[in-house]
Amino acid sequence: MRPTVAIDDAEQLAEAYTPGVADACRAIADEPGSAGRLTTRGNSVAVVSDGSAILGLGDLGARAALPLLEGKAALFKRFGGVEAFPLCVTGDGVEAMADAVAAVAEGFGGVNLEDIAAPDCFEMEERLRARLDVPVFHDDQHGTAIVVAAALTNALRVVDKRAADVRVVVSGAGAAGVATAYLLQEAGVGSIAVYDSHGPVHPDRGDLGDVKRRLAEYTDPPGVDVALGDALAGADVFVGLSAPDLIGADDVAGMAGKPVVFALANPEPEIEPGVAREHAAVVATGRSDEPNQINNVLAFPGVFRGLLDAGATRLTTGAQLAAARAIADRVPEDDLAEGTIVPSVFDDGLVPAIARAVRDS
Image (cartoon, rainbow, N blue to C red; front, side):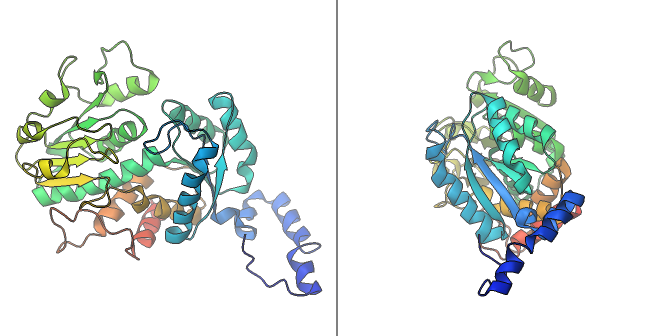
């Protein structure tokens, strides 16, 4: 906490603390919405994890998530001017964890869920959305989906294809894969097939949980027994959000003309970028040492900046699509190319552009 006023003498102390704060306490008691104006609540986000899915490291426990959450808080501050507070949460099940977050949520203008394993992450988000009057944003879901949608918008411009005409194959039906498939469908992509480790997500599969059953309702699987490589035959876009070394050069070669490959498993992608570029027109990864890095930091600072500025109570699909369009539009037409489909995270105009788009959505 850094004070915005001087506290150098008794008069200033009395104003910044007691009895001066009593007026603000009374005002908030009379009108709870005034907390956003009178306190830091209007610029504060809780960054929450139970440590069950830390990066690519797996379940390391809540305390081991603290470095990740502190890093996330630093990015919130650096890029969005948002005060973010790391909360390592433990509990016996999703309900207990949701209770813990809800118990402290009065002090925050938003909640950012981070690295919580599926399917608990979906239930956690649903429970908190039902209980809180502030936006709940699961970055592994919505941050990834927004940046993928933005990158795909520009990739399709490069290859001169329309979203409504393309067929997309998504590998991965965890948090990122589910949210990405949903947002791409909302963005107007014509056909989307989603694969998990057991094959295509299909309505006739008997092993699907609630989340994947809903996913199967709006995706377009090629068939119950069609392998991932076979599904890529004639496809326009591959989005990998799963595991390394899943597809090969022949799979990309069999895709439609000028294919787009997003191999986003990190640190080892679904196909080596150099191999993918032998046949693909546009290749993106999650790596910082390759062109077209799909990085969630492109999205979440600006999204929360806009949500907080608007005093929003929910994260809507419209806000996510608006954020994706704003990110895509930060790449000037003259700069748009096979190796430049997303802006730099250090583009000073990026966060303000996203914030305006989200605020106005």
